Amino acid sequence: MKKVAVNDANILIDFFEIALLDELFQLGLEMYTTDLVVAEITDPVQEKAIRKLIDSGKMTEQNLGVAQLAAAVAKQAIRPRLSLEDCSAWQLSETLGAILLTGDGLLRKTAQEAGIEVHGSLWLLDELLSAALLDEPAACAKLRELMRANRRLPESACRDRLRRWCGNH
Image (cartoon, rainbow, N blue to C red; front, side):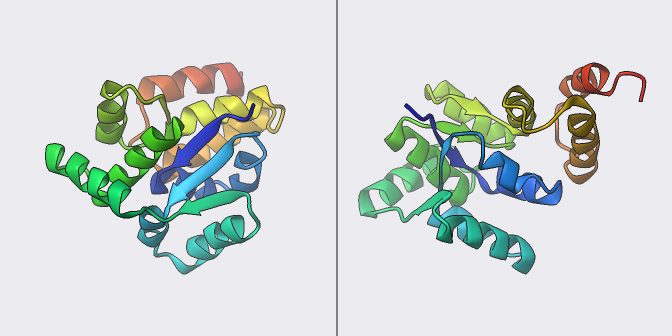
């Protein structure tokens, strides 16, 4: 059975920025996101790439119904520093029993406390390696690109992967 995952905008943006969106969607995960997350992506080139994934059926854009939207709003009331878009991804993960894919630290912590399995960009790079969609030299290069594009990545985890993947490069 395929694992189900819900994407937050920052994951989609990160993998767009390092030109690994196609590979991400070859991992064998059943991918979802919410209509609110899609609306959050305002760069026209990124938006076109995300729309293509949705139109091709590689990712499902879930429109939140009244009950799910109300639940997302309730989550935001509890954690006002989270955006409604973040809470929509958290809510959909909960509804689907899915992994939440996010790089947002507060969303990660909050969703984990609620019992949701949460992973970020580094885990996804690990998965791409495990699935042989990347080799170590390519993973090394892509991680360096990702570190330039996303300054919020955990430094020690990045250094550990650089040591393993880059060797003497």
